[in-house]
Structure formats: structure tokens, C-alpha cells
Image (cartoon, rainbow, N blue to C red; front, side, top):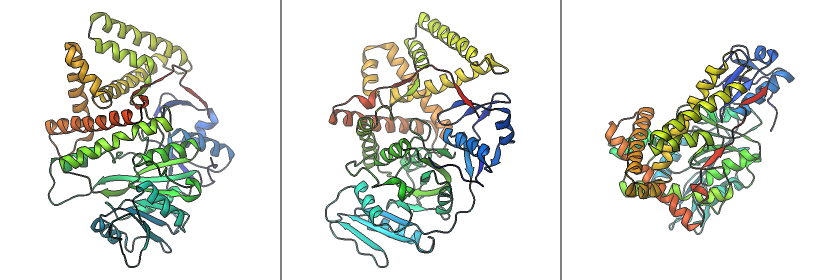
Length: 465
């Protein structure tokens, strides 16, 4: 990874928490970061400028951990190549081109890749590249990437409309030479009249990764970004997307770039509006289509896209509580107590090790319960349904998690739907994705996308800065 340049301003992530004067908890995935006296002085009030070797090492550690983010300066004016893959959708394409008109830096170009549209697309003032037969969006993007003249390529799907000012924040990230990809927040494209599905998608779209900036790191909150809108550094992405993938090619690209040591950035201050599907059959089919991508991803990147990713002890607590027996509840309490005592010992260097251990374990258990409830109703719903048929306790557990997770998700994403409508649509959303996931697993003859990943118990100390 390229070193942090002098002059780069770095600021702690708002979600990072100081446990004492020397210990920070945060990052992606979350971890403990210990600071020397000199490191704490350099960090100051949570923001500092890279001015030499010591501050550079500190900046690189915090940025790599996702515990801090660069403070963006205005990007240097430089051209970009905008690549738009399209199959049909000529009206949407013209809407996008109209939104781009006059907004791109001087010297930029727009490359439309017609991926086998039966009647070839003809546009004035825009370069059109054509596949005679459809080869899929990944291959179409690669064709545009190969023809691009600029150092940076912005991929935009034909059904999006960039919000004014979307490009500058993304280009600013590339002042950091380690950044290979920057992605905006994908929000819903507003219409004059919107049905329930459209309003649900505004609140809970699979493409919308939320309002908080983050590093893009597999198995974390922002584990991928959709290829509907992203900017890449041409020298970092090679030939581009895996052309053989018709779905999840964006997740595959993220996994490969991250494994290569590049920094990938999600910046919600940049926004691109997407025209979500809002007709029931098309909406359900699209959600299921997304699910089919899990199997090829699990085979290409083992352990990178599990349905749950949590410590084994926390998974055991969830299972024991789910058994709903007195002995199992007592066993869960005992396991939590043992884990807390052990963690307290490993945190003995802190001022309040017991309090910190209780807090960290509570956060771990909350996350484990959230993941388990989600997976039970999304990834594993066919097995869960079978269990509910034969077991009253399992039926009660499934119903409880379906309602509780749905209510919690509604509270987190509160949009324009009332609670009941939201929870019902959320459960149908999960049903569709799970259907696609199991279909993909059958087609690829693998159970890999269904297997949970259990993290080993180890010290949380991330070393000293």
C-alpha cells in the first residue's frame, strides 16, 4: 500500500471510542488500538496532519484499521472517463446523459457500451462501443475500461441519475495514492407517485449502504459497494471486473482489490439516485437474483461472504438462549461470565478492565444476536421453516426473531412506511434473497454460502502506535 503523503489530514471515525487515555476501540472490523504517549500526542484532539515519519506511521495504521478517515481537500481538476453499460433502456440512458451534460471536468469523455441491444443505440456527441451479442454488464464495463483515456474511470449504470456535485468528493479521495476505488451513496430516485415498494426501497434498498463514511472491507458493515456507481483508479483495477459473473461482480472486485492491499472508500457525501424496481414480481426477482451471487463468491473468495461472522462463544450463547430451557439459559449466563472474566484479564492494562470487558462483550452479543436473527430469516429460512414445522420451541424462536429483528430494523432505517408494512416487506425481501441464495447453492453444488464463520477467541490488543 502506498504511504500516506505529507499534508494529508486525518480525523478519527465518529464511531471510535476512547476506553482510557491510551486505548481506542473502533475500526473495521472493530478492534482495540493502543497508543504510546507520543502517538497520543500526535493524535491530539482527534485530528492531525501528516508531516513526517511518525505521523505517517500513525496515519497509515488508523486508516488501514478504518478507525480514521482523511479530511478531503478540493480535488485537483482532472478528466475522467465515464463508462455506461447499457442493454436497451434508451430512455433511461438519455436521462443519465442529460444529467451529466456540463457537469464533468474539462477533458472528460463519456463511453456508452451497447451490450447487444437488438437495435443498435445511436447517440450524437458520445462514443458508443458495441457488443453484437449481450455479454453481461461486467464485460460491458471492461470494454469501456479498456477504451478509457483518463486515469480515473467512473462507472454508472443507465438507470441512475447523479446528484449535482457527486464527482468532486470521490475524486478528492484519490489524492491518497493508496485509494483504488471510491463509491457514493446510492439513494432512491424520487417519482411523482410512489407505491409501498418504492417507499420501502427508499428506506431499505440493498444498494444504499447508509449515511456513515467507511472503509470498504469484506466482513464489515460496508463489505461491498454496488457497481451502479463507483470511481476507480485505472492502474489499480487491471482488466476490471470478472466478465464471467452476471451478478456480484462488484463484490468480487472489492474482494480482489482489498486482498491486493488497496484502500477502498465509501463516501455518502456523494450521492447518486437509482431507479429502484417497484413492481412486485420484478422486485422479488431482483432480490432473488442478488442472492444467486453468494455461491460463486463463496467459491472464489472462501470465508469472505459468510451469512454470519461472529465469535464462537457468542454463537454458542445465541444457540443456548434459543433452546429455551432453564438449563440452557443458565449455561448461557455462565458462558458470558467466564468470557467476561477472561477478557478482563487480557485487558488488565486498562484503568477499568472489568467495566470495559462487560461493555465489549455486550456489544459483541448484540451484534451476534442481530446477525443470527437476520440469517435465520434470510439465509437459512428454508431450514428454519422446516424446524418450525416440527418443533413448537423452534416455531416460537423463529417468530420471535422475525418480529424482533424486523422491528429493530424498522427503528434503524425509519422511513416512510408504518411498522407493520415495513416488517412484512422486510421479511419478503429476506425470503426473496434466501430463495436466490439456495438456488445458487444448488446450481453450483456447494454449501459454502450457507456456512457461518466463527472467529477465534484472541486478545483484542491491536498493538501500540
